[in-house]
Image 1 (cartoon, rainbow, N blue to C red):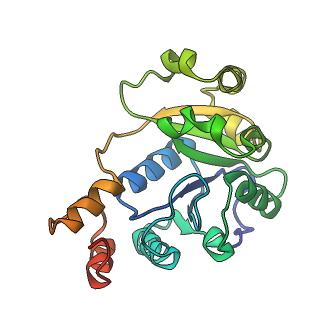
Image 2: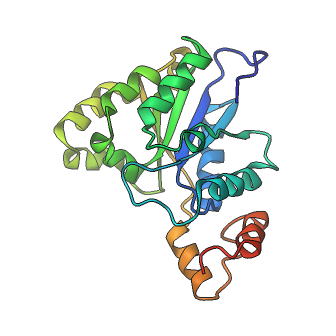
Length: 225
């Protein structure tokens, strides 16, 4: 899926990836709040095809893509990018960002959205330090989560990146294509894909934890039995 050339080159494009097995309101609310905070023009939802760092999901990539499209359908801010699904091989975030950077050009700000827990494990990601060459990293932290106090628990190399790249200046995000870290509080929704799968398997309803269209898809396709 390509970029709209009518968009200003300084309007950030946010990128939010995940297995989305299934996608739920925790994912969607994080993406919405972070996009609002960053004044992003678009949030690109990128379902993982073959996740390299975790077990392969039991639901097929095509079905997880379909659920993501259903979840995004009523929000004009959200678009769904199927590049990792189409590849059919393990995909690394740094490779996806490199492709998006090539498509967006050298000036457009790209912002990778991650949760605080994911950020704390960033140093285990493939070629993780190269991420900053392609995008900013925006960390969604739950209310009362003082990320700065956790800095001493980060691996040394991650803490060095955190301290040198951290900014609270949205203008610096919009004025540069990549390279900064910004942290923002988001509403904490105690929802997990694992919990939804377990509820569905136990015959309990996960309604109101995820969009109705996604729940209907899960039921009609007998997912998570």
